[in-house]
Image 1 (cartoon, rainbow, N blue to C red):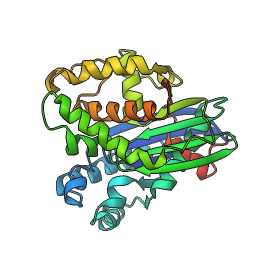
Image 2: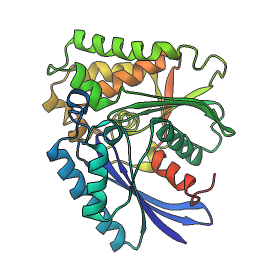
Image 3: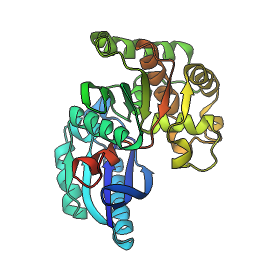
Length: 307
């Protein structure tokens, strides 16, 4: 039995995967999350803020201790959009290593997409041809593939934190702000209009905090249930209804919605709008939720988890 752990330094949250594996099979897993909003302000200022860097260091130290206490080998941490884009991202990665002793790997957008796809393959029994959509805090990855591998992939700067800061200034969001956000997403997608034309995916799979949270809201989860969310189908119609409902609420009311973590309430509308626009652009009438994502993908890439 292998007991390993890995840390994801995302733009919105820092996550820890505690995994128990037997002969390449995942027999036990738990994910812990701390929202440190590391990517806050990066879109406007181009640098990581002192307060979010400090909070991230604190979360990594907490996770390192939790892993050690549970007897899990910590394989290191990987950093995504916020760290790779920020002018002080490299310096921060070195600071993390110096102050926590945890090795940090800054992954490219293409690498992030590939890891997410490998995670999906690990979690879905027979996915067939799929469009995987991973909406993070800073970026969104789109991956076309099947069990044989990846056909095409792209990483675009349209994550939920970034798009909230860029467009949604009012509380609740104004209709024009939401339309501007949709227009931004469409403009970024336009060069990829023929992205799926040759491949013709049969279904869409959503990973990351936006996709899983929307599923949890639809299921009215008081406590997040990894097994219950895995494979849950959310229709485009249900997503449209949810956007109308959430966008019509003030932030304070949104924080009380079952299934929605209070600290995610300010970015969920932007994330949902990005997801809705991507699905419509590629003519998908909904998506399957996958809790398996780039964390599990990293276990695949390091040879611990077999597909």
